[in-house]
Length: 458
Ligand code: F0G
Image (cartoon, rainbow, N blue to C red; front, side):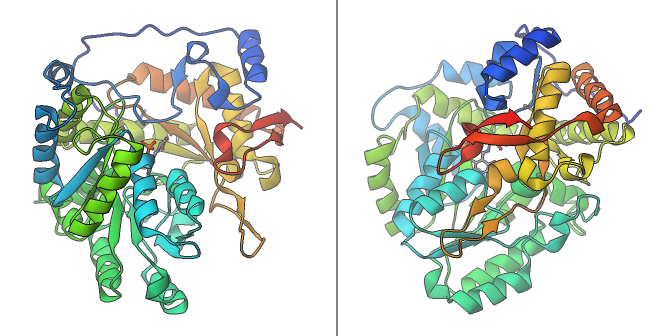
């Protein structure tokens, strides 16, 4: 058995969960249209749908919430958050937002004109959706190793620098209002980006005068991987590495529901004064006054404390260690997972696991449904259901690199026994996987279909 990292905390509050029987689970799944997003949380035993907003806050975060200042303007809570963001990220300005996609929406609104291109290593679906919604053209340029599930490359989240150069050359820097990088790279398996790659990307964007924004929601995990894996970085603290990462960029979007361990919150940070002014104007229209931006004062305080806790190296070693443990247990059952395991989640290569189900019959969806039916475990498909789309310009289908199912680990939430239960559930599925059939979509919206699509088994 792989070794399990001992928790750097003890449990003070508990939340009961229960397990339904198989017939009840089947009924719940049918009602949900075979989409895990349609399930009621009461009907789930272990919920690995996402690590976003699902972590356990600490006693200090809860205590900080009591200090929340709910003033409409100029609240003390805002200034405490400003201090935390200033000292960790180092950008000159920020606006709070209710979550990451709200920051993306504002950034897209103020910077993107129809027809313009926005390159990244891999855009997350909300980022892609926000860019598309403003008529922009999101472009993913991850290194080729990102598509090789078992390739042990330590920084599979990296940007392909040659492709980025060629891309800018081809479309012209004037058609690129901003360039992005997602750290860690969720779309290819929660894989980190190296500091060296960030330096190079930053140099390329800067040489072409393209503003550079980090999608920073899992920046602390990324910095931890840099410390563990990148030559010459082992003597730096995670916080020092994070500071170096942000110094390479002109701004960041942040979903604080990840590495700041809050249930809700985010922000958009930047250096440029004019951009900040425009962002404030947008914020007032859509989110709220710039000192609260769609959040309560207490949320700002929990976020300020959570930002520091998310950088704690004992906590990061535990979180990353938990992910590695689950990945190894799945491998021991013969389940192919992306290697090395990412920071916040284990990604099962459903395309390789269920080779008898073609991409157009959604192997990831089939596996996510099966995991629930077998053990009440909720995962999420991150393959063609989530990411395949018809390019509006060429009319061609654009497929994601892989057909994945993600088991995301809510922070400080589940124990070793829960993870063993998940691995053993997958082990039983592996033993009878040839019986599993694909799915057909019976309903889908225009953008971001995986949240609300409905399916039928084939
Ligand atoms: N960027 C990345 C890389 C993300 O993973 C997410 C959210 C967002 C932006 C948007 O943030 O949800 O606060 O609006 N990811 C969640 C997930 C939903 O499950 O991976 P948000």
